[in-house]
Length: 105
Image 1 (cartoon, rainbow, N blue to C red):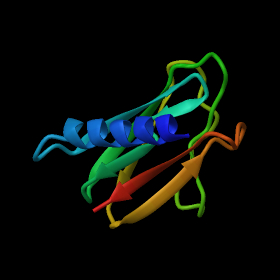
Image 2: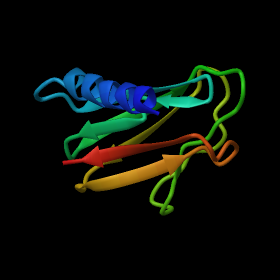
Image 3: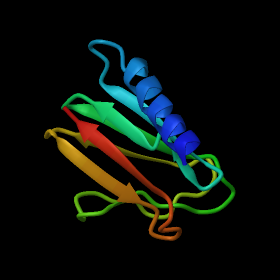
């Protein structure tokens, strides 16, 4: 459990570092039935693009219905621009154990 928490924290820190000052886009990968990074912190106005690297179809589905994708096949993408601060939890509707969060500050 501690290892999982450490990995999630490391992924979140890497994602934050990847967002350079003035940058307005970030990529999230889908691989091995996981969103990477699972926790992503961005600024308002940031466009997040998800790319499915699995052979299985996945969706990006907001837990509150704020956004959602169709089923994405291998190497297909979905993008969402986050304009308001908040925590946006999402999951794959086909594989609900796949969960992640975009935090807009």
